[in-house]
Image: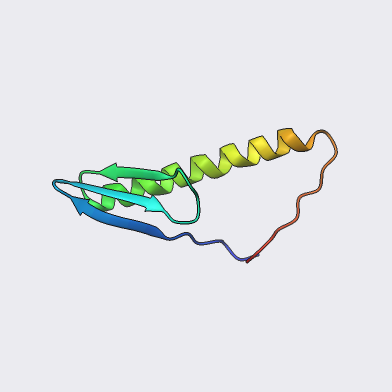
Length: 71
């Protein structure tokens, strides 16, 4: 299975770097440097995906099937 990739829109805003993950609403972050921002976005994305997985599994109940979907 291919590992999905995500796109970040980033920019410097004064002394800070800010960014958003295009494909996942609400996943955004900031950092004092570009590298810090990218690390923060990776962490925020991983946390959001894990929370979404947990929510989906709870909503599905006891008997469910997981199917890999690629765009």
